[in-house]
Length: 369
Image 1 (cartoon, rainbow, N blue to C red):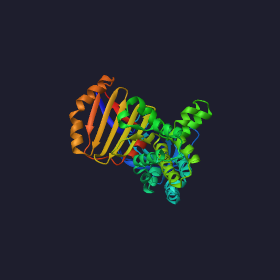
Image 2 (cartoon, rainbow, N blue to C red; image 1 turned 120 degrees about the vertical axis):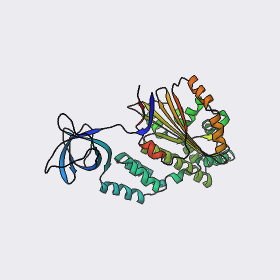
Image 3 (spheres, rainbow, N blue to C red; image 1 turned 120 degrees about the horizontal axis):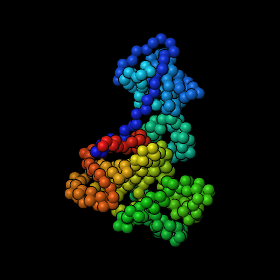
Image 4 (tube, rainbow, N blue to C red; image 1 turned 90 degrees about the vertical axis):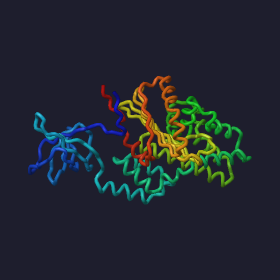
């Protein structure tokens, strides 16, 4: 039988060998904080717990000047060592405060390179994400599909834009009627979020120049060099900034997170995020659609081998009922594609913590036979 446990963390344990000063009392189930004072050559740590220094043996790679949240487990081990479960690891409060203050002082739009460096050097990406969201990062993504649609319309009517560049853009953006599972992957890859990755592969001679030229970011940069109209330039810079925001979110959450390059009359916003747990071979796919007439549709797809769990939030009651009527058809078609166990759930509330859950995604299923 399969028991789905969304976003659960794998248990990781430490063993407290002995206090370096006075004895310390613990209760099973108690939650305690430990400040990592030093990391020894063998990987063990010296930590401060309840104002006492203790030696802790662990195979978990830990860093100096971090704070650990630990849970006291059953201490009845054969070697009399106290077993501790690692719940959370974060930088010290001084470092966290420094990160928050640094981001507050930055203009996100003009300092994305700096923010990328903060992300790379941070041990607490959740704090960086929170700080950026508080700073208004997500507001930059408002109505990206509408803005791109408007830009495309302006470019088509401009005499400054070459036919070649217009054709390159039209190959990326598909009308919803033309969309299928074969071209969906290709248009998502060309949305601009992977542009720098493609440049690196091109430099390593792993891909050809055609792959670079098919990317939306590459096309927009080419148009910027040719166009003189200041309004068009401003609109292109707006879209490029939004693409770079998706790149930031991809970096923070260690996922592939981008907008959906689809022409759909009533679609205001559409985005997709895909993340894999390398160790467990689990996949999470989040798709969010915001329609002018139908409201929000949020879908979370969890994949483990050939098993699927799909969670829907559908704001419009009529659409929700219509989809419910066709669930058996959906299950049948998914079974025909080779999926085994298929679970479908409808949520009554929209989940506003998508980014945090994407960031912390580790393991999604627990298999029990």
